[in-house]
Length: 86
Image (cartoon, rainbow, N blue to C red; front, side):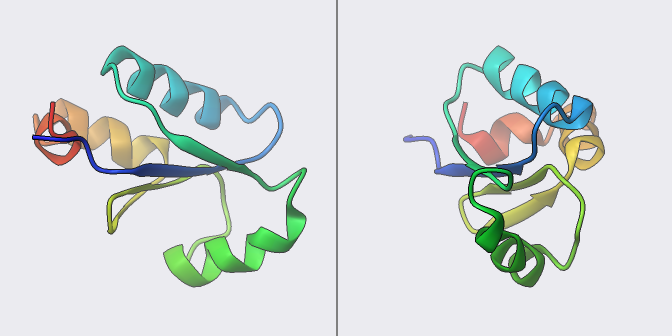
């Protein structure tokens, strides 16, 4: 099974972004990042897709996971590996 594409909207030195990156790295998956600092015009895209204004916003395939707390909760519940296909 191939892993779904992962997209994460991030901003600067956000500690929750770093925590999400570390968790995904520990899972051995790669992801694409959209930096709202270098691409501020994509902020509206993030808000439209997620309904949220905070970072990180994480998408796994077509599934909007949410932020780090949501990602971590999925991992604690044992559902993240299934979603990642690992």
